[in-house]
Structure formats: structure tokens, C-alpha cells
Image 1 (tube, helix red, strand yellow):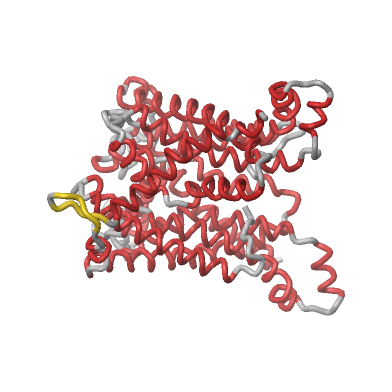
Image 2 (image 1 turned 180 degrees about the vertical axis):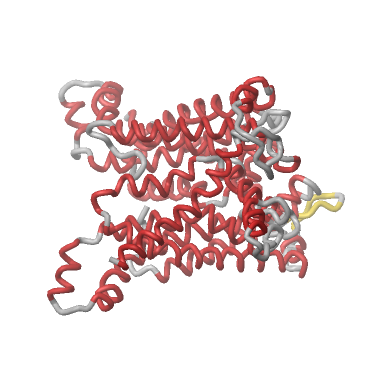
Length: 260
Length: 272
């Protein structure tokens, strides 16, 4: 009895530690004062105001559009790459996989400054395009890593079988291989989308020209004080992701996105 | 054959956006520009000047402490979570969910809680006539921020390996007369090492490279290696020295990963 009580207490303490800042943030999104020190009564005005703040609306737009395009492009390139890598000769596959793990293992700050140096070298003005290219770059490896295990689960010679039965190589990939590996593709896409949404460090070094994602806007604000509107927006995003994750994980015949 | 060419766009992409940037850091790291650009290890040497070297040692020290604290918190937690086999998804969900809120905001929220004058915690302490604490701007605040941000990365891999241990193996240990302690030391602990190694890597790496946490919770008074690198690129525009510092950082990470891989008996560490 005491032991199980202690275990619950321990879990509870870690839980409080992880959620204290989040609860603080949500509570202060309803605070009727710009200060984050005092509680001045309940209000919903920050939720109404946030859509009138041009900086916040613009960064939300950039964040979502970049996450969406980056996830789509990374999923396309990454899926094809995974199929290609799967059928490569072993020694070459080893080299390509080592290169694939580079951005995953490299610290974000190094990836960020490396890309910044490259963009400046090729005279690409830092802004929307450079940000997008950077996001695609760090997302592709995660798509490949998500798709490859599904390819390994394919019955060997599926490709040859489809060709023997008269499918063109293009049809084989599109109608035979892709449907089989689709859970991996979905995981890769969702992973890319969240990574892009959440990235700060790489974006920080590769953006410019007034193009700001939410992370960068928040970082700029930390110097002068976070606007309560940002707390309101984050509360909404948090709630949306919570609902989305619950729906995904309740999907019948699910392939558990959260755990894989 | 079509399928052989499928990876070509990616390979080109990787060469342009992964290999070339790293090569550029390497080149910038070992050159200096004094009128003309020439090869020199001057900047690498400069990274070992006391001012910079201290920041480097500090980063390693803070990252180590945070990793150890994370391990101490996460291992028992993962053990407890493993007992609740039926609640797997829900339990994991609860401990991963915080990661889906912007990490800058979450870290910033600690300011609201811990600030010396107006912080929530000190207001409560003052109300109870207890002594207040001053933590923001100190090394402890930075370590707290690291533990807070990276703890889930330690919980998940350890939980993953623990939950995959075959229950019959544990039963067998009992049948063969092992006490609970022996079972833990001789069976559970060795089997969980790959998860612990992944956890250590996933906490230590981001902790040693972070520049945001010291900026926010250390009030910008304490510099880590990440801050120095960032300053070279964003403030003083000394890319050559910034690249040298990055090279030193990468070497340290490579060395620590090498050490970790030696510890890992399975030599895979793939608990992800």
C-alpha cells in the first residue's frame, strides 16, 4: 500500500514538474493584465486580440505555410530516396545512410550556421526561400528513417513480381510499393510537420528580411516581455494538437504515430 | 532501372545542403582573413584561450550534471511506468505531450514561476513567511532549464527498452531464486543499458549545444559554448572564429559519442 502510494507520489511530482510551466502559461492567457506577475481577473480579450496583431498573424502564417510545404517536399523526396536506398548496393547504401544521419546527429546550431554560410555563399538572400530550403533539409532524413523499416518488411522480390506481371516500373512503385509503405510515409510527414513547426535554432540562423516564424517572434519578444496574445495563441495550438493526437491514436487499426 | 535513380534527387540535395555546409564550416574553421584568406590554426588555438575554454568546460559540466539528474529522475519513473502495461499509450502520451508546446515559451514560463521579485513561487513563500529563493540568473536555473526541456528524451528510450523485456525472463529469474534486488542488478539493469545510452546521448547533445536556455534563465550573464558561437555569427560577424568554435564543439560531441558506444555492450544503442 505505502509502496504504491510512494510510486504515485513520485509520478505526480514529475508530472507537476513537466506541466507547471504549461499550466502557468495557460492560466496567464486568461489574465486581465499585461503583467505576468499578478492575477487581475479573468478575460478572453487576448484571444480576441491576437488576430488583430499583424506580427502574430504573419508569423503564424509563415510557420504553418513553411511547415506544410517543407513536410510535403521532404515526404516526396524522402520517400523516393528511401525506395532508392532500399534497392541500392550495400556499400553505397552504407555511405548514403551515413550522410542521412549527419543532420540528425549534428547539433542544430551547427546545421544552422552551415546552411547560413552556404546561402550567403550562393548569394541567396536570407528570408522565406532560405528558411524553406533549410526546413526541407532537416526534415528529409526523418522521412527516410520512417519509411525504410516499412520497405524492409515488404516481401522480397515484390518489385520483380509486379514487373513480371506486366506493370511498368512507375506503376509498380505507385500501385504496389507506395500503398504498402504508406504508414511509414504518414509517420514521416507528421514528424516533419511537427519538427518544422517546433524548430527555432535552425530557423534563427537561416531567416532574415523580416520573415519570422512563431518561434522567432517569441524569441524576439522574450527580450521585451511576451505579449499575452502569444500565450493565448499557444494555448489554442496546444489544445488543437491534443485533440489531433487523441484522434490519431484512437484511429481503428492504428499505426501508433506517437510511439513509433 | 528507374528505382536506382529514385534516390538521385535526394543525393544531390544532401550534397548541396548537408555536405557543402559542413565542408564550409571546416574551411572557415581552419582559415583566417588578414587581408587575404589563408590556412591557419590560429582560431582553433584561440578557442582554448581561458575566456573561451572556461565557457567550453562550463558547457560540458552543466550538460553532464543535467544528464545525471535526468537519469536519476527518469529511470525510477520508467520502471514505475513499465508496471502499468495496460496504460502504455496514455502514460507515454502524458509525458510526451509537453514537447508539443513551443519550447521557448515553456522555458520562458519558468521565469514567471521563479523570478526573484514577482515570481509565483516567491509570492507563495512570502505569503507563508518562508525565506524566498533566488535562482534566476544562476547556474542552477540553467541546469533546471536543461533538465526540464530534455527529461522526456531520457524517459522515452529507457521506458522503451524496459517495456520490451520479456516478462518470462523476469519470472525465470524469480524461479531460479533471485531476490528482487538481484533480479534488478543482474537482469533488468543490463538489459536496459541500450536505452540508458540513447537517453544519455539525447540529453547530453542538446544540453551541451543550447544557447537559448542560458540566455533566458541565466539572464544572459552566463555564457555557454552555444552562446559564444551564436555571438560570433550574429553580433561580431567573426565567421572564422565561430566556425572554429563549432569544430571544437563537434569534436567534443564525437568523442563523447565514441566513449558512450564503448560502454554499450550491444553496440547498437538503437532504442529509438
